[in-house]
Length: 153
Image (cartoon, rainbow, N blue to C red; front, top):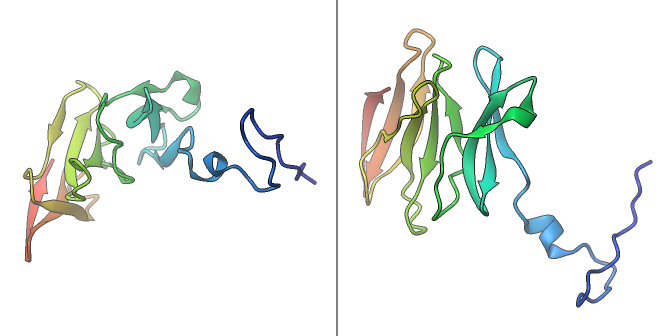
């Protein structure tokens, strides 16, 4: 049975017998883990200087992970989508807490990072993907009350 005792409090913390908030609410070391369609790589969010970025590693050598984004202002969103071509990974970002999520993709061969959807005031989500079109996604984007779909790679 695992040890169920609570760690001793840090200097300046009161011993209340409760779990420390940082243990419950702090970001994990890695999150939103996704395996590539061919099963050879893994993508996940992990921090660089305290900001969650996108990392990719061989599935059998996670310790060799490398960051493929280097955002410094806000964490990436909690969605990571591997394209079926195993070359591109789609991730989502927002600006200044506006929750208008914008899709971006990174080319793992060239390192090219580019936006896939319009900028400010528009939010989006992946509507559909198909094994018949491995380098494309159908992304819906909304501005106010209108919804539009675009196919993008």
